[in-house]
Image (tube, chains in turn yellow, cyan):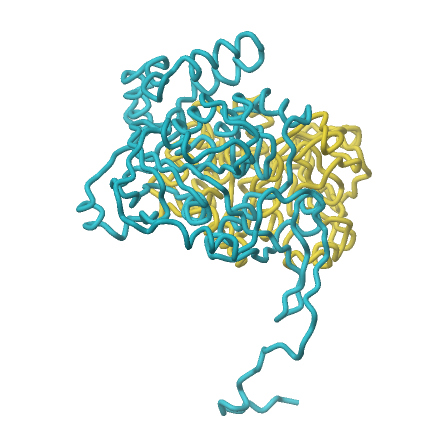
Length: 256
Length: 351
């Protein structure tokens, strides 16, 4: 078995959740790498969309911006942001990936600020398209490092909706039924969400990671699936494609 | 019991019309200020008075900014932050020291970074601000918000795009299915309302009619008929929503060329107030099929922001001591650098 790093593992795991013939709205970085890897392995017909208007590109390399010309290189359509977001609102986007500074046990995400709104201690970019994608795509995923400060129920600001306050809360708020967080892929584990409580639940544990490590790095009480499996490490084929085709310059997989 | 299928138009048709009168109700969930008037009739009056004469609108960037961008105006930039931004206009706004502008922080990255460096804006509709995507956060932009110099109201990229769309449609609002249930809506100026036909909840977002917008395009004739290649982002709606529109274009083409390819014209002349030919006018951002982003320059900008003295010199060199966009291109490597960016865009570079 080849050696691999944490980022490579996360990208490979994320790519395995993307089904062939599905549609995914991605940003730059690890999510884009996961989608590109999926296309080159088990989901060749996965259709990638970018929120600025790129549809179905044959990505020659990692885009730097969600709107740069790579995002529609040899693409099917170069369209507009409203067109992409309206496609999501019509229910035609299966997956999306989000990031953020904080996430709580219901998968709600903060990417707006820390501190007071009018005089924030730290101002982050805000929603961007994240609130829309979390509201309108069917399955929301996240690739993120896991630590106590990031995984916390003392979330400063809910920028993008997870399951809000629990089962039925999204629908009660008026969000389209059936969507919500799907998988959270971290450097330690893969978590899904319990169907009854809508709380984060450990499903896979990475090789060499202990239960205690996961608990120590989470600021809230986690649920555990009845059967917790070990994450299958990247295959030779996945690593080869990831390193030679998806990210040859190691922009993403070279990150510490 | 099996239901009898009646193949009869009168019986098989379902009536989905509303059952009776009901007062329109809404809940004020967003508690932040609304920086522009969403009223469609006020906008109609403005657009009624706007000239529809197809006349030569060519100008200089300096003239257009002096004429159409006023202190206190609400301004919006086309493109996507580091892609097809109207850089020449943004620099000129800084050079002319425009103050207290409102700004649409719609996927804004480097565009906002320029205006904040010039201390031009004091209020912002924030969908995506202060960051440069994967490149990191702008220290100067962050400080503008963190020390309270710029006040903000939260939105998302889609709802801000739909605010342009509502205005482009000549309406005062549009319903949307995002924002609901989050702090983003609590810190917006949206309201929650029910659909009169289905009773379902919507976020109602107010139309955004900017006083003035600037968009960089690939081709325009002297009248302002514009063609764009690649993604349009939200520019088709923005062009229609803005009360005044400044166009910079890579190239001015003859009206005959427009008439040979009308299917490619996305902004008609009657929306446009000024047309300026600015080759490489989106530099240092990416111009589809022309030149790629100057990533080195953007990183240099982010780095310079970390030291106040250094950043002052950086701004002098790149904006205040430049008389126009040509000067800016010259101090950053001129044609030689632009040729490299062209090769990067066309994937013919050998790096």
